[in-house]
Image 1 (cartoon, one colour):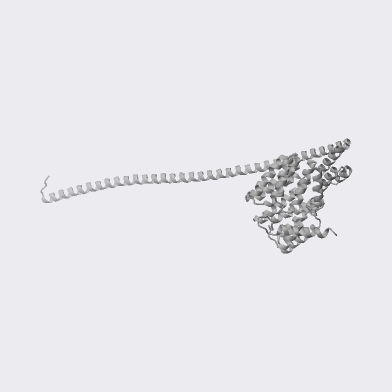
Image 2: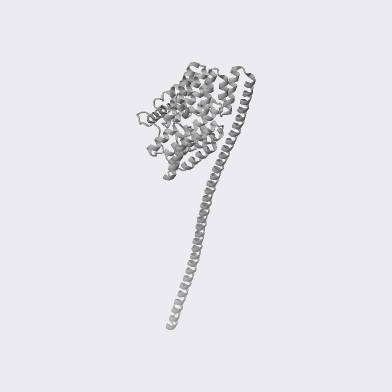
Length: 445
């Protein structure tokens, strides 16, 4: 009871700090533009996303959405729910919550809805990767990339590359992870989503720690810490990254000091998932030489690969070689199974993409064929019409020639007839004259 009052006061102060409008600082964005009081309560719950108590408020938000027939409240309720479902290991319900969010926002293309949708799917993909479902996360990332391309959204592309970076980190491809996180940072700046930049810097720093490039890791830790004035909730993440760095460098005094500051922060238990806290505890116990306690804590890890990795390192540090070999063998088997699974997943994705590409090529080919058929149809129709016109002209010319021939024949016949008439008249005239001469008994030639 002594800690609850200061805890609530501190969280309330942090929430007010985040929500208070200040010049030059980004804020928690009420993207769906819901009621301010409800949104503030939602933002408070988001700051302790793994708290099981969030389910009650998530349910009330969802029911309010049903009552108001408003998809926005339903979305926020479901969004609060699935981090808790992940923490509880109820992955089926987590999938159902995300599927319902997709159904609710389907067909809604306004900017606010999509800018809410991208981070929700990104968060879901983080959980998928954590439980080994990297292929599902990759499909989500590529779907997000296509969706973002439709409207030229830098924000959507940023989250897509961030997901791919997390997948490469899971596959221990630190170089490729850094490459994708860097691209995500570029899109982040283009989208003016500065609140996400420090998170990307933290992810890049963690990859450099894995590569033992401590100077680079320190550089990106400093970049992330520059934003702490505007985003106080970053302090937990940056301190955790610092702790990983000092542990890797074996700077024990600084590591212990950082660890103590973490576990005394009330936000640490609600902002970091269980495995991350257990891993930090294992590192602390091992650094103190408490190997038995470290082994017991490592058994609490839910991720088999990290569990075998940590236990192998502990046994090796104590010179207990037989258990160390057993853990290493289990670790290699786990990595091999993940590698094989990843290859199969990649092949399945590649096959799907090739099939989609083939379908697109077939569609383009069919489209071209249709265009050619239509063009040929027009040409044939034009040829038929042109031929018809030519035939009509030819027939007309033939008819005119026939008419001229007949007219000419008629004219010749008429002239012959007229000539015959003229000859007959001359003959009649001569006969009349002869008759007249006979009557007068005088005939003159």
